[in-house]
Structures are given as structure tokens and as C-alpha cells.
Image 1 (cartoon, rainbow, N blue to C red):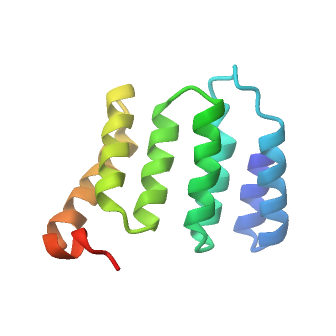
Image 2 (image 1 turned 45 degrees about the vertical axis):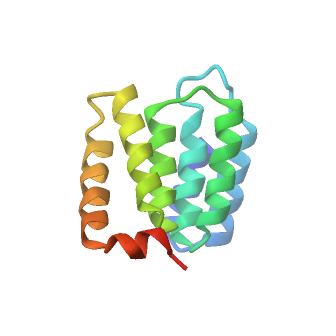
Length: 130
């Protein structure tokens, strides 16, 4: 699928081609496919890696409107929240992912990382991130 081509282009440093392929993959999404969220998650990961976490969040919100909730979607939302520095939001998404799929080891690991990060941030800094 195009999402894998986009991932390959990204790994090779071809950022423009990677984004083009990842965006094109969204046009092929079948909302009935249980893996339909994967292209959205791949694009969100790419955008976040390019310092464009706000765009990634927008794409995942599109996915939330079109697709059923899933552990993958919640994990991707958590990852973007971490990229934005919104750790409490990330924790909520990782917990939601684990609630959907209790065997989701990846979300469990990321939840632990986010909880550890929040514990190292003074509460006043979390309340006023600006």
C-alpha cells in the first residue's frame, strides 16, 4: 500500500515524496476495513517527526470522524499529544487504547513513559505550559 511506500520514502530521506504517498493513501481508505486507521496513523507519525504535530492532530481528528474508535487511533492520538507536550492528554489516549485492547503492549509502554514524564514535571508547569 501507499502508506508503506511513504514510510520507505521517509526512511530514504525523500520527505516530499513520503508525504505525497501518505496523503494519497488516505484517499484509498475504506472505513469498513479494520485497518483503515493505519494510513492516518502513519501520516500523523510522519508529520509529528517533521515538527508538524498540530497538522498530525488535525488528520487524526478527521480519522475520528470517519472511522470507528480503535487502539491504534487512540495510541496515535497519544503520540501526537506527547509531541505537542500535552502529557495528560496523551495519558488519557493511551489508557483508552488499553481499554479497547488490553493486550496492546505498545500503548502500555507509552503510557508508562508519559506517566514518568508527568511525574518529573512540576504541577505548576503542567497547568501553564506557555
